[in-house]
Amino acid sequence: MMKFKALAIDIDGTITYSDRRLHFLAAEHLRNLGIPVVLATGNVLCYAAATSKLIGLGGKVISENGGVISTGFDTNPHISESMEECEKAFSYLSNRFDLIRLDGDLRKTEIALRRNVNADDLQASLEGAGFYIEVIDTQFALHIKSKKVNKGTGLEKMASLMDLDVSDFIAIGDSVNDREMFEVAGYGIAVDNADPGLKLIADHVTSMSFGEGTVEALQILCRRDFF
Ligand SMILES: O=C(O)COP(=O)(O)O
Ligand SMILES: [Mg+2]
Image 1 (tube, helix red, strand yellow):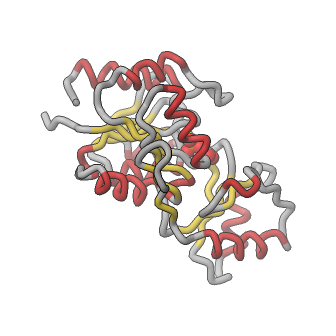
Image 2 (cartoon, helix red, strand yellow):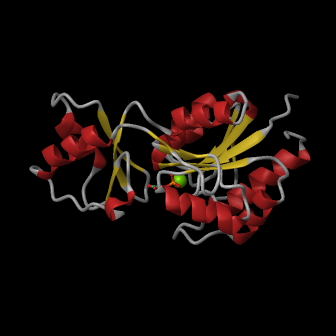
């Protein structure tokens, strides 16, 4: 059995309850795992970094769906150049839909929206408009994001910064924005509340949901010596 060297794990819907409250037992299991743990989220850097600090992890985070990557607290993040096209797509869509932006000016590389409109309708409206942009729904927010940037490209970048191969990682997640991370990691685990499409590409699906699913996954990984 190949030994994995690190874990990349989603935040919302994976180490939380359904209402985004942190699942303390999942956090404790992550803290005691004994290998590097990278938090990978669609949320902003300060959210990801604070979560890493409060859990007791080392500050390695992938935020904004791979757009902003940090290898530790108080280090300069790696920021993708994708906000300009997202802003153009947002302006184009704002003329057609009632869009409500989230996170104010905290976001550097993509735009998050309240889920008051349907992502598929926004995506359909962009077809033929010449944007290399996608609109995804994570069940927590809509994201207007570059197709060039995702948690998979973020994990590849993080792996190279950690002198690891991306296949050295196990990935755990719940949503459509975890797909590319599963595609590049060596092993992918979906919690039971996960998006059906993510479950189809996962190597394992837990029987439990949300944070309980992550506790179940980490117990299995440790019991079967995956690390
Ligand atoms: O920011 C979101 O929409 C969801 O965040 P997540 O990637 O941590 O689940
Ligand atoms: Mg999630």
